[in-house]
Image (tube, rainbow, N blue to C red; front, side):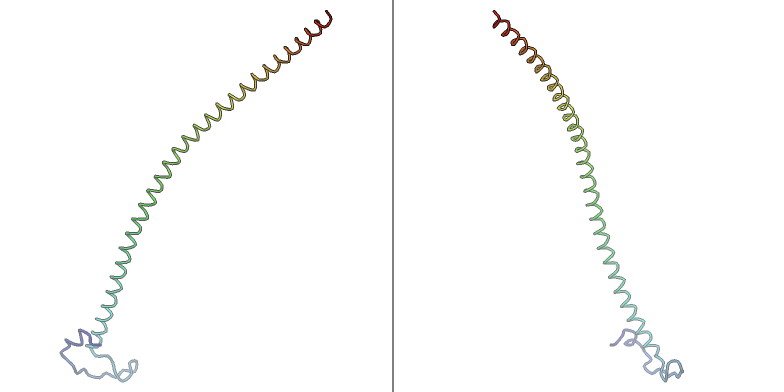
Length: 131
């Protein structure tokens, strides 16, 4: 692959360097510049990809954040209205319980009155039979 630095490099002949660490050749200045340009290009691509992913993540976060806020508001509204309905239900249930208790008391009175009337009728029948 040709690198920009290699293409524009004016000195084509670089001295060979002998270094025990590098072996019998060390990289030329153009080659080093080309490798650095390639590494820069790769890093720039990675940075752009990270920026793109961050932008997508930011959009998703905003979307998820908005959905969670809307859901919270909706549920809060529903729970508040349900609490009002629960209070209304509790009030109605208590009123019905009270009415049932009142009706039971009236029925008990009516049954005692009926028993008393029944007893009076029996007594009257006995009196009539004696006559």
